Image (cartoon, rainbow, N blue to C red; front, top):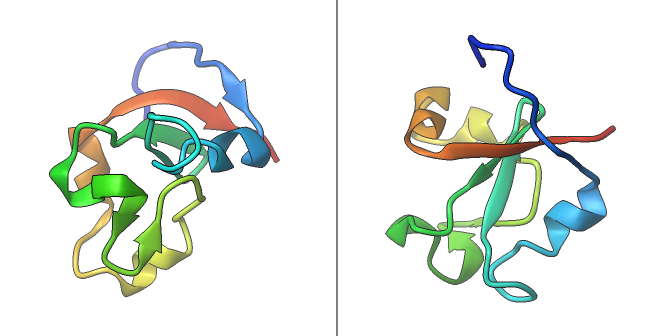
Length: 83
């Protein structure tokens, strides 16, 4: 959760989907309404992290992950996911 009053740009699911490591060089994922830039992570090479693909909302998928949501603290929030 964001502690300050930072205002982030909003992106649609379609815009997020383009940042999948294939269509555009940026690699983004969404979690709990925020969009994170994971481009520099070696674990998201070419937009794939184990069985997960970038450009998607991973909120529901985190339940099956071997880690918790604190993993997102490593990455910068670059926007909010609309609807």
